[in-house]
Amino acid sequence: MDNMSAHLKTVTRFMFALLSVSFIGWALFPEHEVWWGGFVIGAIASLVNALHLAWKVNTIGANAAAGNKRRSTLGYFTRACIGLLAAVIATGTFDFRIEAVATGLFTAQLATLLLGFWAIRKRERMQSVDERGENN
Amino acid sequence: MGPLALVAAAIVFGLGALGAGIGNGLIVGRTVEGISRQPELRGTLQTTMFIGVALVEALPVITLVLAFMFQGKA
Image 1 (cartoon, each protein chain N blue to C red):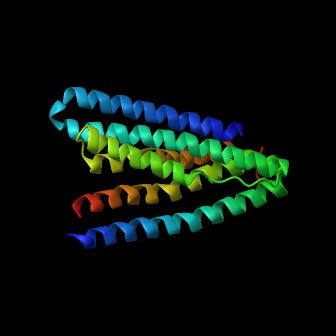
Image 2: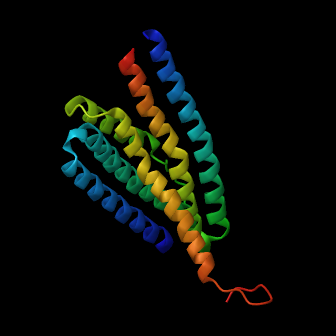
């Protein structure tokens, strides 16, 4: 459980850093506002999706560990609706580019994957192995 | 494009959701099985499941936006 919350914290930090870079880009290059705005809205929706997914995964894990027979879903419909809401807000309210929203919607998932691989490699590198192949 | 764009939207989102459903089912099923067998490995298994589900679900969310784009062109 601690493992996942640490990973989620890393992803959240990365996303906030990416959002701040996007806002700086938006301020420096306002002529590309339709792209920056779409990307920001997509990235925010993506971060919300990642947090919701982490909560759902934690619930399912807790149920499985406790041996509960209670059914719990992964909540994909909610996340799909959040993505759709982001697309509607970006195109309907602000006239941002929908391609930028689609790119933004992918960022938290991509960050989760890449940062996860990076954390696994880092953990493996930190675990020393003696000459008999045992972990110390 | 007309009605063909609507058909394209339906196909792209339908197939994306179908693939994600199968993938999520496999990932969650195996993880729950693993946690039930070894509850002490819950943290590791949950993290792996989180990464896997995030990867699987990225595609249908993008297909949703693509479907929305196709619908706009209809």
